[in-house]
Length: 193
Image 1 (cartoon, rainbow, N blue to C red):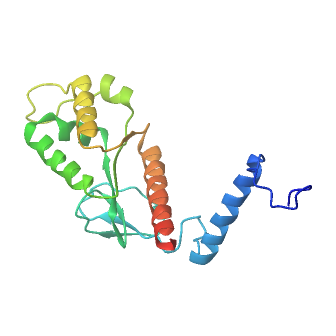
Image 2 (cartoon, rainbow, N blue to C red; image 1 turned 120 degrees about the vertical axis):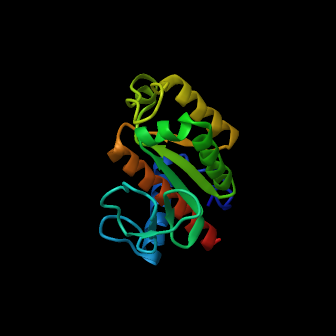
């Protein structure tokens, strides 16, 4: 209470640490309610890895193979969350021909209908622009790094889809897990309200 008027103190807390502590306490309470696995992954959060994913991330917590309508990674019971993973080779292959680009664009259109959809790249922007993979098989010409990056950015903006370039596959795995974890956290908040 206010020392002179006896009314509750209506001024906001100036202690930023207090707000952080309150947020951590709410998080602990939510974790206690829903449980956690030993590695810090929520017990009720099951990652679905699409069966068509040829080289999935290794060692994902609480995951199983399944079929997803869109993307390579999703969450069981939460079909409105998906992540598409692209290796360097796959990124160039996907964006190099009109036919493959059209297929990828259809996936981005499907992703637009979801609450959360993102593309995680296993390569950096610098790698895409300056170190494209060598041409393959019957391919007539070398890959064009700057043109591929422009196409990807254009499609990302056109379809409001975040693209997360990463340094390597290990970082792409960490980013994918963080994105799925955050999406699951938002789902919890929606269920609690």
